[in-house]
Amino acid sequence: MKELEERYAKGDNIGDGHVKLEVAAAINELLAPMRERRAKYEGRDDLVLEILKAGCERANKLAEATLERVKHHANLVCWPRTLGYR
Image (cartoon, rainbow, N blue to C red; front, side, top):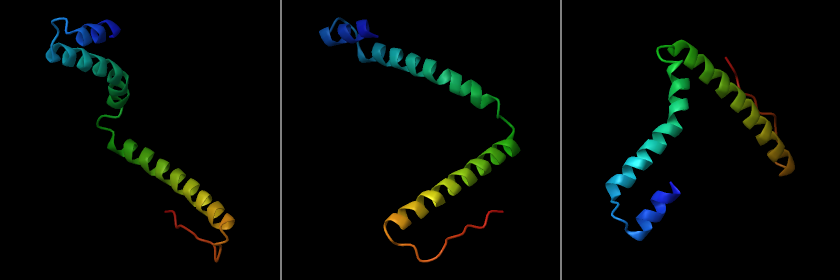
């Protein structure tokens, strides 16, 4: 990629189209493992929803704990806040 950058900077008979092809190839190489991991979940909507719900619940619990700490340090504690998880 460094060689390509130098050739492009020099104007060494290399056009934008060639650079775009190289960039597209690099992006595809970067995304390939992600696409493989995603393919494992293809057609498994029930599992995906279960994973998303579990992640959402963990994130909400962490956010609530953080909010509680912030309110405590800012002297904004009036009553405990609760979320009803189902």
